[in-house]
Image 1 (cartoon, rainbow, N blue to C red):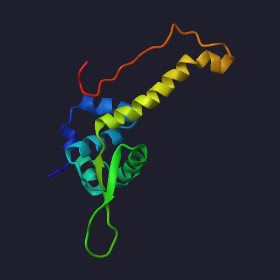
Image 2: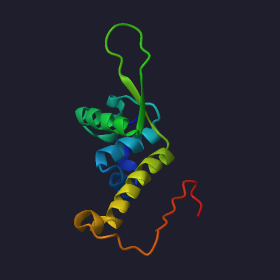
Image 3: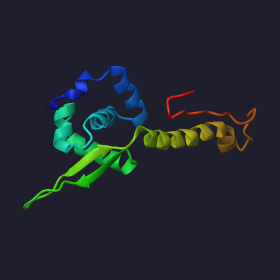
Length: 136
């Protein structure tokens, strides 16, 4: 069963993913979905110990950010068909986050120009490399 499976995950991993996703709830949901690929809100709530209403709110944010995919459950009969969620590949999230970080770093480089009209003082471009394949 998936009952509170997230408790067995390394705390440092949860913290690192939380920092990247700006939310511990999002991190726990993402980690859960990496382990249990196609899950409903109820399954995620049971597996993470997060209230279903909080999962619903966070999973919608994650969907809008492109961190998760969703599809309607194929179900016979009447009534609402819940969504089934799955996590996108980590490399897709790395790409999204690295673009945001680059924008923020560029803002930092240009801070003097933006607040005082002074030209930016840099010694040239700063290159940051992110290796998705795990190799340097």
